[in-house]
Image (cartoon, rainbow, N blue to C red; front, top):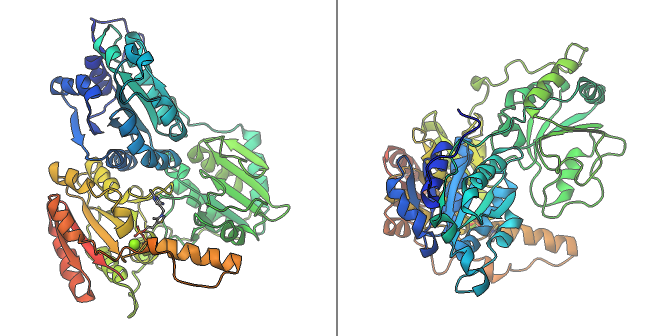
Amino acid sequence: MNATPTNGAPRPGKQAIFEQFAADGFTRMFGNPGTVEQGFLDELRNATGMEYVLALQEAVAVGIADGYARASGGPALVQLHTGVGLGNGVGMLYQAMRGHSPLVVIAGDAGVRYDAMDGQMAADLVGMARPVTKWATRVTHPDSVLRVLRRAVKTAMTPPRGPVFVALPMDVLDDDTAEPAVPSTLPSRAVLPVPAELTRAAALLRDAENPIVLMGDGVSVSGAQAELARVAELLGAPVWGVNSSELNMDTTHPLYRGETGHMFGEVSARIVGDADAVLIVGTAVFPEVFPLRDSPFRQGSRIVHIDLDDYEIAKNFPVDVALVADPKPTLRALADRISGRGRRVPAPSRYGDSAEWTRPEPGPDGRLIEHFAAELGEHAPESLIVFEEALTCSPPLLRQIPPRRTGQFFQTRGGSLGIGLPGAIGAKFARPDAEVVGFAGDGGSMYTPQALWTAARYGVAAKFVICNNHRYKLLDLNIEQYWHERGIDRHEPPDGFDLSHPEIDFAALARSLGVEALRVDKPAQVQDAVRRMLAARAPFLIDLVTE
Ligand SMILES: Cc1ncc(C[n+]2csc(CCOP(=O)(O)OP(=O)(O)O)c2C)c(N)n1
Ligand SMILES: [Mg+2]
């Protein structure tokens, strides 16, 4: 590819942006239109290789793009309608930012020429987008439209990745530009620390009696799953996920222990409290809503943190060896320095051997979700991808379908509800050959039910399971903790946690949006429901009445 392009023939910016998107390999734009975007949306008819995917609410557009970026490993393009559309997308952008999804978000505005007029729908788009993006900007001159888009792609894709926002004023796009469209440059961050730093890190970990590993999605971005498992095996260290929402380690690995959780610092403190050495890889410590303000680590414990995100290293508590480095090569180099030094804990010999794990029987009093997940796990094809926002139904689901293979598990992250349905659609767009099943709570699914319409419209054969307990049950559990901590007697939770009346008919809702559906409320119906869902060649929803 020509790295020093010369200017080409002038053409309007609204046309040139599609040349740029093509140069960067974008084939879909997830969006919701408005008048100030009509100029460039009208150009879509001439843009070959670009499909516009219409979402009926901006949170849906962002959510589909998020699932698409996660399942494809690349950037995803989102179009929002000026300030009002951006506003609707902000909650979903927040979770994309927390999850480091490389979304390139564009929105139109009426034009630079109207800046002083403060007309209808005028808004500070960049100011709105800034807190929920890695970078937010507005193009103000036609000769820099493509330059800024390239910077946006580069910024979104360079670890630590994240969503970016570019406002494209209508008049700037109407003007001609001779700027050439060439692929964006994506810098390599395959960074390995200098040997002395690696030796220091290895020495701290190797001599530990009771080491522990905390890991998160920086592992999967780096493709370092095998290296992480190997280091854990060499150390004989239990591994805990911290904000681990992708497959960072086979969760049936003997050293995998679970997730530290998102709510209470005391929980994490109990997990790390005995460790005399801590290896943190690709995650933030700690992500809880109510974290401990005092260090949860044992006094004198030695801490090594490896991450491409320097902001997250030592963000809240000091670290002994802080390495701004790519987990994959760094863990491999670390393993070389740890191995062969007489470790007392040998590696489990059959790591990753699928014969080792067997699906547990759902107990006789097991909830419907557990029966359903067991049946699905038994009959789903190898390609199964689970997109999971099941919240309180998550533990029985993951007991029956434990995440094991890279790229086949995506969990909600960032705390903003509504990703379950659109995320599954995005994953299916990205991986059409896989069997994609999205799980969402009855509460979570109602933030973005319009997503079903988009699945039907574009024939995206994702499957959806609503874990319907007629409640915001997680809020019940959290308020119990609140009562307990404050010595308040148990009583009825707030009425606003109850979704039981009027009853939401999810099957009817799905059908009204073009998606076939059925309701399951007895174990005897599960087998047939799973069979029908897996046989469907179109989107399909199951309203699973769990309570
Ligand atoms: C956009 C958004 N609004 C509100 C909340 C607060 N919230 C957290 S959990 C929860 C309940 C979710 O209910 P559901 O999806 O049915 O799952 P369940 O807790 O019943 O398993 C709510 C409302 C949130 N996280 N995000
Ligand atoms: Mg619920």
